[in-house]
Image 1 (spheres, rainbow, N blue to C red):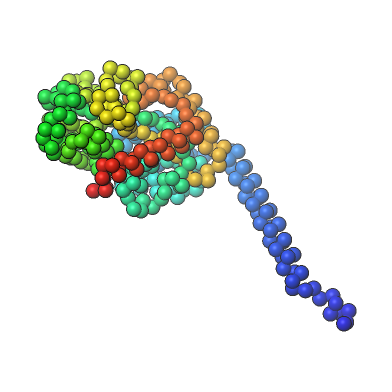
Image 2: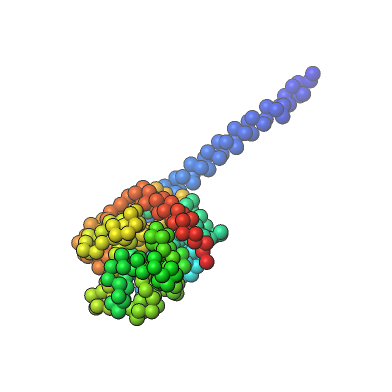
Length: 341
């Protein structure tokens, strides 16, 4: 064999060398990307943050979303802009946030609908709330109040339920829309008490409140903060709260769980979420700043004015809360037979 032929390297020997080279280059690339991400999160934030929200301005959740944005602005010293993208029961904003860059500059103020309810009855939302978001911090948790008009003869939940049992389908209840917590609370009340009631969906809480005050529907599960002014004005009467325990803000009002259906628990809640793969230090920064705001007396007072308590929480606590809510609504939809119609 000639010297030249002996010096030719076997293709079999070159393949492992090529693989090693590719692996080394891949490792270097990953290190560069990781260093860049670390440097970026270390300087966070250095520009405006956008908070997407899936409903029109002016509602109770919008008020608290803006309070949360204000708290983040004060703590991070950067503008935090709430961008309302209403439609599809919150899914338009949620989808946009889920597909945003995971850099902490686009975050989402999500509620029970987009995160826990819609997925139970919608085949394709354009995102998966379980895998596309990281829970950051719970922003508010407000009980629903079962209210009737003061023109109504009902002065107790027991009276209403007894009438519903005697007259199947006669008792009707309002909601701010199909698939909302208030709607499903009504469905579950009927299921748990062995009654049949008629659901009357409205396009928002405002029209529903108008008709319940006017006595055109029998009862309405509405956010506590939205009905208290009407209760004080003498046009609405609260028969019970939907939360598992009494609210310390109105401890005199009993719960549905106490009066008629043990374990009954429905609330309206919302909180900050970030796109999945957002760096953990950014998630913790956002969480820390909101929790610090919750400890300030003026922020507590403003939350209390919306019937919500200021309760600091960790991302893991919020994630555990969301997991329980998803499981609860999955069971509710099955038991009540709700199909999204």
